[in-house]
Image (cartoon, protein in one colour):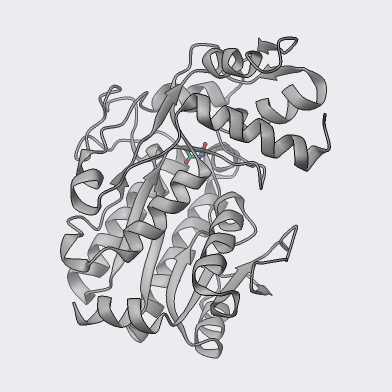
Length: 325
Ligand code: AKB
């Protein structure tokens, strides 16, 4: 309780690792807007595309504990959003690297959190689920037997978070993100990336070749909902956090064909074709819809965007970004 009040009132500095990535870009901007950009430190191996409104940035590799420690100590960090991660498709191409990056960055954050009373957010994913998990309305507590290295890092990471909470009382919180769709930063290396690419291609070329089959339904979410949910979870009173594994959250589920049809309502000439590649196997191993009732009960999670509202907003924002009429 004391810790929560302290965090809410003093709002010490916030470090976002992986800040140039898909979630990192949106989250850094949202945190800077909410708490003031002087409180936010972004860190990544890649420079951010646009530094405006993002706060301080350090180019560094947080898989090395001494780099992370320097950032924490020099900036009086009280909260870490540890987003440094390789995604599912890259993880299958480079499984050793995926294990190393995803787990060592988290272990470093948790160790520093334990030593310095830091609060941590860590992103899990629907990739914790595998072919043996129920596919519809997948419960919070269910079979976790992923068949991708990315999924294995996410299950292991969740268990590590839970261990650090139970053994060292580290206040670590996590969300199992579905595929995320944002107009600010393009996705990279994931299985759900098609749901971002399709918007760019529809606007630029009026056609898109999708790397998943037309009927591959997956859980998805518009980035503003994901960012609001993340900040809301971190602001929730500690007594309401009932799991230190990842919380299921959900808003949309659609297939490539469904999103293509939604885009066609606005761009009637748009044509989508389908040529599944190795990412199809990953998509086939994941659930189609998620039961997020625990998150709704424990910390009042509620998304705002449905498919129609998201499509309108994505097209509107991307038209401005791409300079398309
Ligand atoms: C991916 O496709 O790898 C990610 C995820 C669902 O975690 N977007």
